Amino acid sequence: MIKAIKVRIYPTQEQMIHLNQSFGSSRWVYNTLLAKQKDSYNEEKRKLNMSELGKYLTALKPQYPWLANVSAGMLQQSMLNLNQGYSNFFKNMKHFSLPVFKSKHSKQSIKFPKFNIRKCKGNRINLTKKLENIHFKCSKKDEKYLNNNFDLIKSVTISKNKSGKHFASFLVERPNLKQLPASNYIIGLDLGIKDFIIASDGTSFKNIKSNRSNKNKLKTLHQSLSRKKKGSNNKNKARIKLAKFNEKINNKKEFYLHSIVNQLLNENQVIAIEDLNVKGMMKNHNLAKSIQELSINRFISILKYKAKWYGRKVEKVDRFFPSSKLCSSCSSVNKSLTLKDREWKCGPCGTTHDRDLNAAINIEQEIKRKIGLNSPELTLQESSKILRSLNEEKNVSMKLHKLS
Image 1 (cartoon, rainbow, N blue to C red):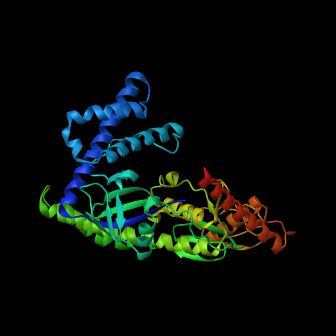
Image 2: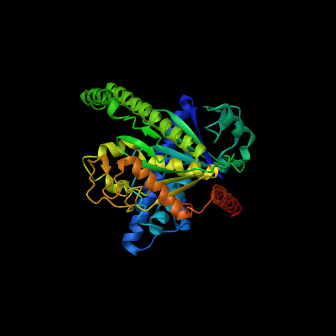
């Protein structure tokens, strides 16, 4: 299984200059090849293959001698990234957009393939000749793993954020990732705005409102930035100050999301969630800011990849399943329910429901029905057997993936 280990790096002043040159060269190559691809498609209605892009890149080097100052492997990786972007778009146009030109104001990153990674000893990493003995910081556990399993490193991506910090992401093969002990519990989750997550067992995780709780500080920093003279050193200082504060907010949110996911995966074998149309939800201008602040897609992404690591299962119910309007006691549907109704009483059976908790229970019951666990005739032993088989199925699929 492939896992990324992200570390903070501390390049010297000379290495920073070289990295900035590499960021610029990589971006220039990407944009130039993208323009070539667009011209080819407009004129000949076809996409250039890797061989044709490679020949064009080789022909560019004599015309632009400064390309020789950076790693050839890194430039080739820019070409591979562009080709992968086009391939993804033509394979699935619904989920992938056509590659666009990169800006120097967007995220700065470069990727070094395996043959550019020369050595990793202690808390130092050697890449190319101009990027030797780079100091990095991470946990002792990750540092030890990188040192002992240097041959398993597939690639290293160097990135620079808006506050000027540099990071290295090691893509590592980790075949012996520790599996969590099998559990007999299934839980349904309803994602909301008042509370971030409401679980079917009654557990709730609050919405920390990361942006709204720091609204005044963000407003002050934005105003300070806007008042500074364009191109001045003071404007750059104000920009970095704002970037650092945004980074602090995002780090808190990321830590919170990971802690929620870890708790859910430690306690449950199967986690049921709704297949939410977040893009469509963002079109509601009354809720767009709140939905964006929650980072729902990021939470689901973390939940999925960690479930894959630890042998858990994430199941989705159909987005048109009426989880909020369905009575979890008698299965009757309340068609008159609106977003304002936080509690409602079922007419046929008289049960009073908390809207979010009722939705979470319905999601859990729907997944149990889907995998055959909601039958009243099933004993606890038989239910445990079904859950164990789900876990074994997951382990087998992971082994087959490794073999392929």
